[in-house]
Image (cartoon, rainbow, N blue to C red):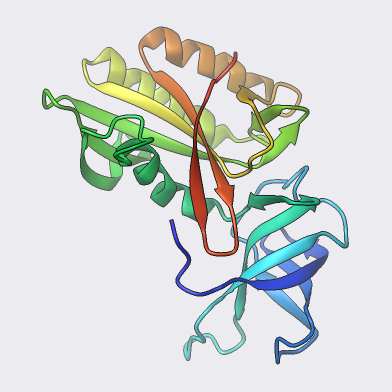
Length: 241
């Protein structure tokens, strides 16, 4: 996945109300030294944006005449460790998932066909993608963006998420009714060797994950390396639980 425009370097100062980040733009940007940015990630951003001074990389947002007081920048990546970038915009994960599944060289299932996105499933949920395999079987695919790291583990979630548990329950019901279901963890950093549920953050998520696998839900993980121009698909990561 490539960004439309180069990212702007900045420094993280503070975060307010989950969706607002104050950053100091690097010199030479031609903008005000400090700007409020839209942060599309509602999680805690533990291990990737949890202290002032972390390098931050922003995308530009086109001004909206209907909202003149809106943000002009969006948080895309952070660099919590020297040389380690983390993709912190979870809205990129669905596009990355398409590449992770269909890439002809590194894709998990390159012969699948993409049907549609934002597919209604169950009474209250929408699942990220619907695919069809070589035999015409339907695959409901839910994508989770993973940024939280401890040691060599990429952990999900980084905050309690009843919505994530509900998605697992909907995938389980789809699998039990004869369709196929895949939960795909998209890890947006290159310093992890496996994916696991974050037990200390949300113990119920592990329980739901175990129950989903028992119901027939396939669980897989992939890693992407963020850079100035976009993301490079690194390959599959094992999911341990």
